[in-house]
Image 1: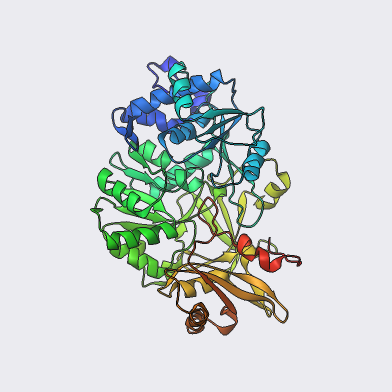
Image 2: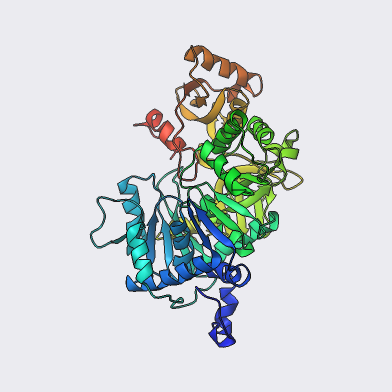
Length: 525
């Protein structure tokens, strides 16, 4: 990927109008403004923007050598590394469609995504069995480097446009089977601009990629950092000590983590402090974080501005942001997801007829903006249900306050109806999170002869209690002191092993409740 040397090297005016809002536009700007600056660091490998641009141009030649054409879908499976970033940028920039694959998925789940997307090539960092014999597999280690070195630098065969498909991102499936979320170039660019409107991305930004890059959260800051000419440091696998070492050694200024990571980082920094004053921005998302966890995190990283992000794969992913969270811990807004990002609209409606609701009333959260998905791949019925009049139905239940802060109370499918009363699992989870021994919690409904459903909690503790039954009773008593009796868990299961999660770090409640609803009729998917 090179910069044009003359006006005649630029695409026609009509194409240029669209090309300014494409994935490739970010690299073109970086090449024009930051060629010799560090673009990416992964282990002992550092690439400047000039070097990254050359590799992206050669990737175009490699893709052509593989017989790929604009619009073809290409799977990518692997840990965070500079090659993954190259494919994330290069495939869409050369007019192809990236299909990131969850490394935690089973072979059946992986093959479903590849088949559903119609992928012709798979780039993978590991050997795989049970693949379609017609699928060309490229090892992203030695083979990738050999092919890249032999390829001629090539410009895109056709400059992508804003509305062209950039990627198909398969959802984590927290409520059912995975769906391929179609994100366009315009969607990804809108997300980058929304992020840049809230955070000061500059050439001095050193963004640490901790979340897996196969998920939208893992690449949430990729284009924003490139547009600013900043540097991305890639973490292949999360360990609290390893992340803090990267912050210290590379002067990391910003990152995004999920609450379980944040808990581990706060504990590690408290126990074995590193020099982390460079970290000025610490964002978190994927699932709600308890206020007590936020307090511990702020104490461990006092120089960092804290930011809560609510987002979805279908929204590329940013929907709302709550900056300066550390200053709000004693206010009701600390439990909110913040306000809609610049360029994004959020309303709360009656799920029955989509009538907008007044502030303070719980309903379904709808989202509109340039970041909203074009729909679900090969699923026109699901697309028509989720997208109406430009609004995306999130499936989340929430309310807005007078200041426009969004408070999430549950997934629509996770709401518990017990004895005729609606119980929002998030409220019960917040009550349990306030107990100092609780690390993770999932609350859901289980069958009950009298009430239809009963509130059940699965709680991950910091250490195994001497008497699990007695400790479960303690947790119930703790809840009873803070929430209404009908919301208090009727049963509590304690454990020390982590809860099952999607690639985005969201707890898979359907896996936890499956045994309770086996052979029963239930609307809980």
